[in-house]
Length: 273
Image: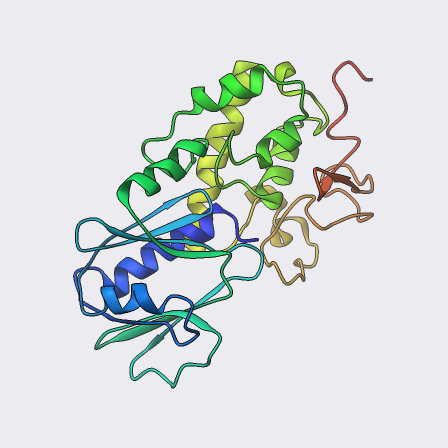
């Protein structure tokens, strides 16, 4: 599932291509046809992201809510657009660009009140200007749940997925199995600030890179990572490979129905020697 930086990048891309234009809106698949007929030829006035949710505003109060889920894909291209396939849920097209949405978990026309209800159930998003990290910490600090699970809970913090969760915990030497209530305010502040910086870079470069300059392949004289997910990382999807810092084999385990990755030496439990 795409992480939050991807959704914020999509919001930017939609805005760059279509904001302040009146694109043709269609649903070749047919599942969004009624809404597409209502929106086609009307101005796209804003785009917005919160966590893994994307919002496109037409006119002043018509919001399209998109959640890609596990299988959703968005592709952009220049016009003239090719004939759409019958898997396209939503196509936008104007004189210069088109975009196709396929396979989303959600694609619906919603009211402003329905949109606000989605925001209300989500935690703060490190990429939003209105984010309140203290609100997230209040939930973290009261919980016996592991910090690794809390970071993936979209009600606690929105937009963090499996990659950012594993990497930020490694970068701050935090045992992923520590209960949230054992995370200190200072630790939370550094984790939050790091997520803001890492995810902003993710938006900028449209990929996740988490290694510090001194640990890049060039700096360490090691081969670059070869992985479909791209980007240089410390632990994510590196099970049994040596840690870049200490050489210990990276471990993996199932946690909250997702694969967790960590270094048992660099991320020792509190109080261990």
